[in-house]
Length: 363
Image (cartoon, rainbow, N blue to C red):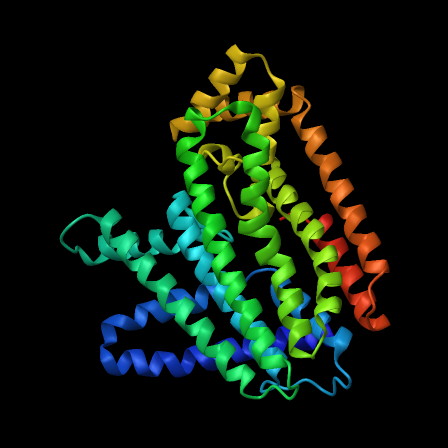
């Protein structure tokens, strides 16, 4: 299976790259090697959706795909996307103050544990912030290095410029979306509740939908020399699918099984995330109830009973049902767009399987 081979090669590429960087870090100081310990641990897991979508889009327009090897440009591109994603997770967990990632301590929590184990001076929290910011920054630079090395091997005249443009746009947009997300978490209580869903949609589009699915599709297809019109068609597929992806993530963040998601139950509520799900709740309940829901969402400290109250309110307000309906509508739009794409049939099938995995995932 091409996808299975891709995932194996991406992991080997990331391991190979990290092993080389580990030697360089060790030469600077053995104290820095912990950065690579944390990095490789994070890179060892995940769904790899970005790598898979980039690969499928590349296959869709490649004149001849040939057999994949660890040195193939698409493997390098896919690895760069996974490195970038891991960097974004490090910073996102810090900004959200999430304690866990994929069932393991978040990177800032790992640095806090190191601080405590070594008996360092100062506070563990400040050390955790500093360490995770630097690890995330280092991984961002490594993603650019992997990306640049991959483009040196590109064999299509339009590939390099188009890939660089799409990669740069992705990085810019996800940072803009991340700021809007942080802003909303802090400014929402001062803003009109009737516009909460509209603001959440904007965050969702730039922080997740475009970055998670549209960008990998555009970058992968650009590598194979796809035209602007062909890439525009992929956007019509990727954006609604990306919106469905984030809405499903929002539902799992409130109602997901911790044993499956690797996150505590109701973690999004505890972190005060402003999502379409919470926005629909605020729009649907009486003002007095909405005020209480808002206060709990901004409190930062919720006990199990409060989380259960908020979950019940989300269900009883109809917000959960409306969100599920939106997931269905966006999914339908994506599947219809996929059917109309000018793309290789094998790639179309691969994208359909990936779309189904995105829509029906449980973690």
